[in-house]
Amino acid sequence: MQRLLHIAVYVLLLLLMLLPSQAKFSRKTKEQLEEEAKLEALCRHRNQGEFFRLEAEGDCRKVATCDKEPGTGSLRLGPLKCPGGLFFDIERQT
Image (cartoon, rainbow, N blue to C red):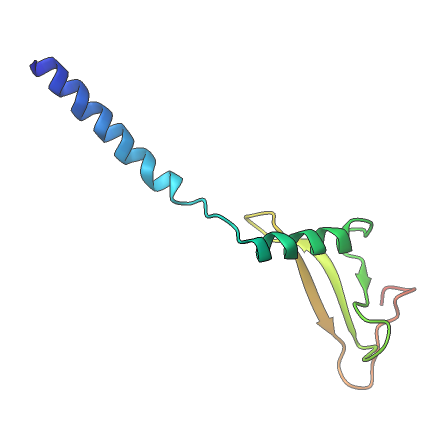
C-alpha cells in the first residue's frame, strides 16, 4: 500500500512538472490563422529582404519586406517609410 502511494506521488509530481510546458502553447483564433495565410501568400515568392509596395497607388515612400521574427521564426511584415523628399526605388531596392 505504501509503495502504491509513493508511485502515485511520483506520477503526480511528473504531471505537475509537465503542466507549465504545456501552457506555453496557445490556440490561434480563426482570424489569426487567416491573417497568417494571407501573409504567407504575400511573401511566398519573395526573396528574404526584398522590399515591395503593398499598394500600387499612394505614397511611394512606403514599402515592406517579409522576414522572420527572431526567436519564434514566425513570418512577419516589416514596414519601412522613407523620409520626406525621398522615395524607394523598387527596381534597384534602394
